[in-house]
Length: 366
Image 1 (cartoon, rainbow, N blue to C red):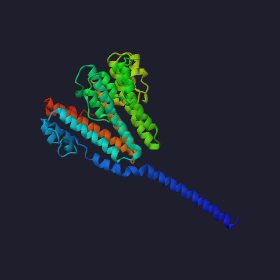
Image 2: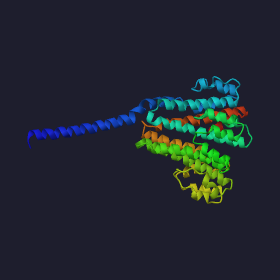
Image 3: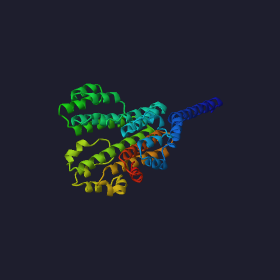
Image 4: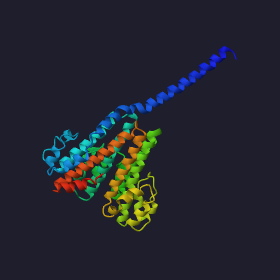
């Protein structure tokens, strides 16, 4: 083989190696670099989440005015600045604005390819608000009492609250993904329970479609998160229905497709206790065993335990994929838990509950 041929082979080999290195470097930069700044910022924010000592201090407030004052050295200060009458409703709205601000920040600082997921997460409050307003209207209750000022459709939700007739709400929902199922409710093709289920089916379908459209670890993390959330919703729904004595045929239409566990065995047993026994063999068995004694009296205990389970799973993924969407997801879950605790403390203070009892009760909130 002459020198020219050898040189040609070497040049080709070097070109292939250089192209491969360039490709791998580009892939690495594309996948990980966009998360470097936002995740570092989120970690700094996480360090400022309220400590157990701070929650105990807040539990000692005794009045809502003191509660607000005790939050002046936290990131909630600006959101609580407009609180003047110190009612629990005012405080809750301020906390809701703080949570909305967190979602807005995620949308602002995260890479373009993943920020849309956080906008989709906000749509859960659209679903909650639409469902709550419709149920309140049908029950002749003040719909405004059930609205949370979070979501992507606040202006439409407020218009629904002001609507004089149920038909007006259809006009307000025109052009949204919820128009068709609301029309079916008006026509009597769906009852209000099925209507609510269909709202959540639309929401979770959007989340799952988004997760499945991603690649590599983003898909792994988002798919795990969405399917865990669907499992939680279905487990709690099925157990509440079973506790109410509903049959399998009545429960099935209330469940959301896309979860990871089969719920048929739960639906065909005769009691809540037997349903819990069936769940014992699933991956949620340990979660349920840890709170088994309390579940029969209060199913919200299980919901809180499942929230913690989801947070633990996303935190595990965060450790495995430190420069990924797992970090902002984990932070959002922690922030939501913090806001739930603050709302619980505010309500208990307004109800005149003693500080020691508040500490005990809020320690159970997750």
